Length: 91
Image 1 (tube, rainbow, N blue to C red):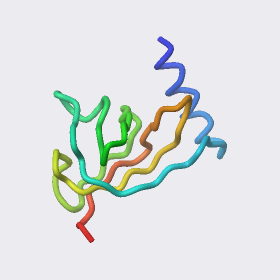
Image 2: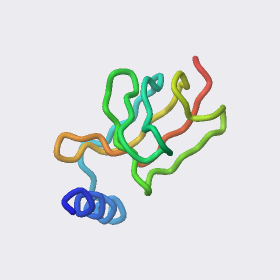
Image 3: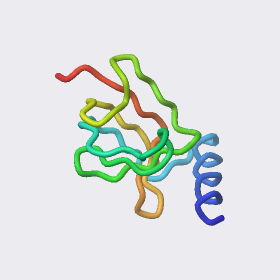
Image 4: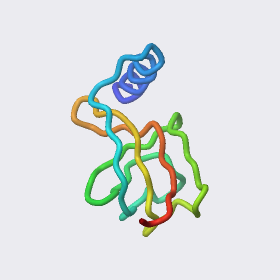
């Protein structure tokens, strides 16, 4: 129940333009949830929480272990919650 409340609060704050510690970085996906995209990911050694509200974009390939991605989100209570996860071409 507490996790649901956190995600709802983050969604409300984002919708009114208030955010906590905006994050944006690029990296390689090291681990993904066993089923689907929702859950905990490891991207370049960072723990990233993907929710049902995270925008998933697969313009440059499938999101999978080894994919190079752009992560956007906010840090809330020490956890990075992704607002967008997008595959990218390696630079």
